[in-house]
Length: 388
Image 1 (spheres, rainbow, N blue to C red):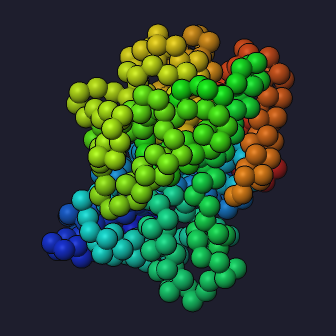
Image 2 (cartoon, helix red, strand yellow; image 1 turned 180 degrees about the vertical axis):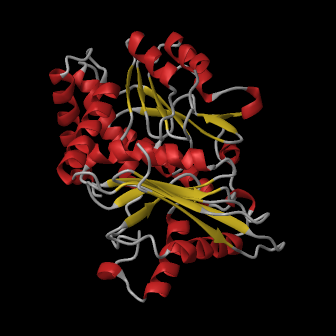
């Protein structure tokens, strides 16, 4: 399935040390989005809009030095089917190989403004709605929204937030992931209460998933970032999680800074070990794609892990997804207000459960059920609208 549009533009910025950057905006099938480059040398930004047939393009932005055209195309394609499961939305992806971790806030603002200026003709509340992603959170979206409003002289619905004009609820993806995990675990006759959970990443999805897991009685014990991982042997309390959020909210903050606030926590640099070496009951990969490889997954299973719940875009490879099924390990990729999130997750779970029964899938194979559900919705929309 080829993208409906692939948008590539030149994005010039002026960092503290003068340089140029490029951005990419990629748009897949009935949903789609964008991609970009770094401000160190002249490059071309792109955006990929994958598929628009089920609704406006919706997908995350990614500011990461390893972002490439193929990465964004892959993310946009995956968003087509994920968004089809959650609602009548198209899929997109985009971003830049711009690394905000070594930039000042002024440089980040200038980059976001330049990025938005180049893509302003292709985004908007009824066409393409950028959302948060790797290294793109409320701050970056706020800079983008401010520039979009400045260029278009409008303020959708009079509410600050994402370009769609809706108030931005960063907790929703993480809370939705936790609620879906609860539904899946209970469907297998078990409970999250008292279960030890490892969560890779320490961004918006990871930290808010941990927050809701605490509400549900689970025990988050570890988080990670690109520099290493931190473990609280007895689990993070609400107060400790709040301190961790404060640390990560600081510009260029490392997760390792948390051990200065806790006498019980341990920190391990990336080169000395993996988060997935730690025994747990359930694992929540919420960092990036291919977060878990075969060796790490086998170690998780050996250490007693009973379930994987994906909070990132395809953190498991195809080979690893097969291992989780043959081992009996449950796995599912994720999906303001807490009541709305619960209702949404209940509807999604009901839909994929019905698909699992209809196609006689192995018990607990929600991964395949989710893919089939999304594929059927996209295929039906394509047939209805003809060859366009």
